[in-house]
Length: 70
Image (tube, rainbow, N blue to C red):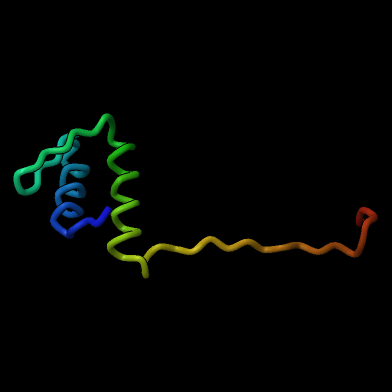
């Protein structure tokens, strides 16, 4: 779904104020919890600002072989 900055700002403002419904333009969205709102905000940030989303990294650890280290 394509999000716009106004939706992002309205959701951010609602989270700060502790309100569970967000209105932007002629639409109103009600969320079940603040956690749902934060998840929606995270998804919006990923789509609107892809360069600011941290990338996950995995590091491998190699031992001396198959035997435990003594």
